Length: 424
Image 1 (cartoon, rainbow, N blue to C red):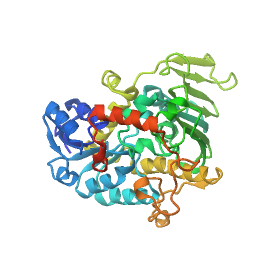
Image 2 (image 1 turned 45 degrees about the vertical axis):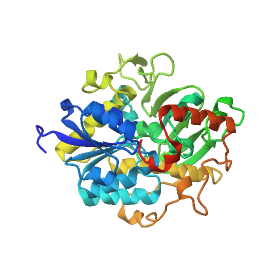
Image 3 (image 1 turned 120 degrees about the horizontal axis):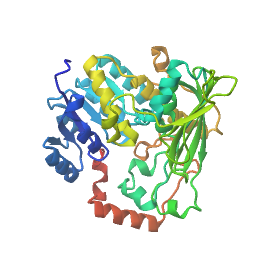
């Protein structure tokens, strides 16, 4: 595709997707042409604001004259939507997670390979400025071999906000297990070090009945988790995420020539780099703390959400389409990152024993998992499938349900139509 040709983009999901819709701007070579959602009031309002076509039917949406689709629909529905778009000849950028089962991961990889289209996994946390800088230092060889890493995505919410962003008792945010939302914590470590997960042990902090704020939500899954991951170079990564108190996201990379981490106190965008006296060069400080710049488009990136990450997902997606080269965050990394969360939950339900992460880049590995649809989705439950909590069934209180329904009604959400709302 010639650089001067605009990439015509359609967005699925006008909740989270509205951020992309407003960011699909000409400087990146992208033009928004269509929106799709089943929540018609929100869809029509955004379509009118942006002056683009709107669809409530995904199949009709895919018939629109466009080059690429951005999937910001529900967390557990990305792979089937992506596969349909690829079969329709569209490039795809998918929000997290890439897949909700191992079988979906296999099917998605094979659909990308067959289509020849670009697939970009829109995990945005790696693209914060301090993560860009840690990748730069690591790739230059400044820090030596990666030995141990930590990624943390800690996001507690007041009950009213938690209920607000999850309209409906069956909304995915109200039941997905603690381990599944793991890409914000694992993604930066993989991006910085170019490593892939090979083994997983999952540990879950169970639902806390003593937490008054949690009991006012209708969420029926656990509080948080810690996932220990063996990487393909032998390093260990600890990924923590969930609703623990102490909001923030941090990345820590230990190598055999030094340490890199963003600060936990003050401005977390500041980077700390430490080298021991016996490792550093003459005249080099043992420790330095500084605020790194984005590698490109600093002004534009700074105006977008998630520490600039939302800009760079758009940017790298556009670049991949223009060059015809699959991006760094390709389908293989997206699926690998996503299935860590699935396997970590299996581990947590099995006394935190080790589970191997299959390398689905290898066709020989895929047959073992092509029918593995094990998942905690209440709508897909079968015998032997898990509940969302390691404690078993969690029942929201009558008070929590009443409070949530009042919030949903104020948003214009009609709970009786819950089954229709497959997209944000």
